[in-house]
Image (tube, rainbow, N blue to C red; front, side, top):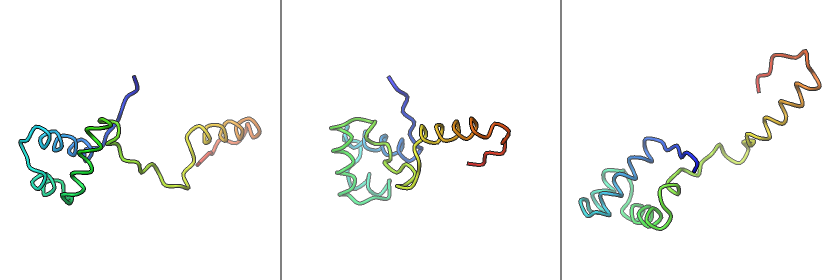
Length: 91
């Protein structure tokens, strides 16, 4: 089992959606509390019920220009290997 790290906003969304599911809140009240539209609350609720908490994690992970971590590690290893006396890696 892997650890899932959620932001405070994502946790708040899950708590509010849980209240909607248990009928303590209406979708309209949830939308006001989260600053979203009622339609967006319905979409989030559907996604949460069908796919679980892991799907509530934001999909924004640095944009399309960000390099993957394993690629960065590979590049830094190659630089260290070739330029063993170079210590100032600011990348």
